Length: 167
Image (cartoon, rainbow, N blue to C red; front, side, top):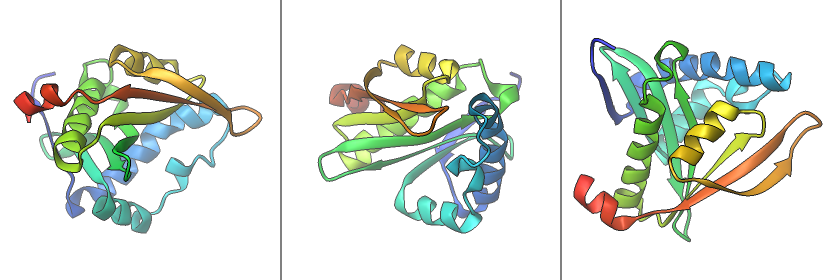
């Protein structure tokens, strides 16, 4: 890839780049499900700024460009909800999605006491589902949300020892 990609905490200065990247990345999902009203495509800058304050948000940077991002929160039971894992189309297939996922898991375990991870994926999103399975996630449920789309819930347990040495 040439330059190395650095993963770090998102800042206010990243918000516009994250939103533009999110819009770009979710075009393929919208096409897959024939639904261009998916929430990631209609989210506003104000809504994303609010998420930046409330959630753990990581970005992957290649030089000054945000080329990936992921968000997560942890509830009172220690269940982390991981959301909006995105990687610029030209950067896909190089392990960046896996690095972002591992990074958010480590951060949520170390800083927010996550004991379990949960994420959702569309039933036709085979690339995402394959990544999640490769990273140890297993399907625990499916919910039909529209005529054309079902969401698969995937989970895995946090492994505290793994993060103690890498945090």
